[in-house]
Image (tube, rainbow, N blue to C red; front, top):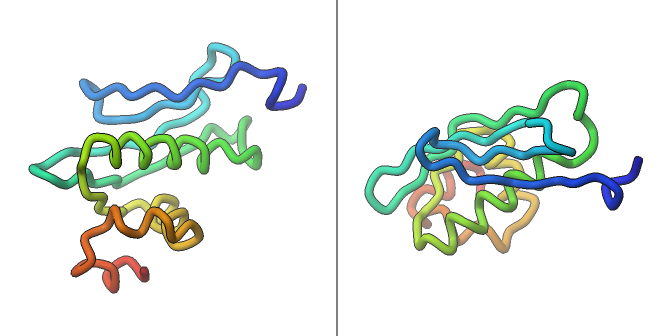
Length: 106
């Protein structure tokens, strides 16, 4: 089954502090976050091994960062998946406070 045939949904669960990615009604993974003031820290991202290698981590991170941008918050990418994503997609680097770019290799 291709991604086009699957129902993939990213959900923000602020009460749980995470964005979850669902595939055909099954939770496939998440990226967790914590808000403090004007910053949203992302400490962890995980995708169930059954769903590995399909780009789902990138998708949940992208949608989480887009939502964070829309909320007007800065990003603190403690999770290696999130920091790697930002390094590979420099149009997201402005989400990280400029005085912290070196800390995250940006």
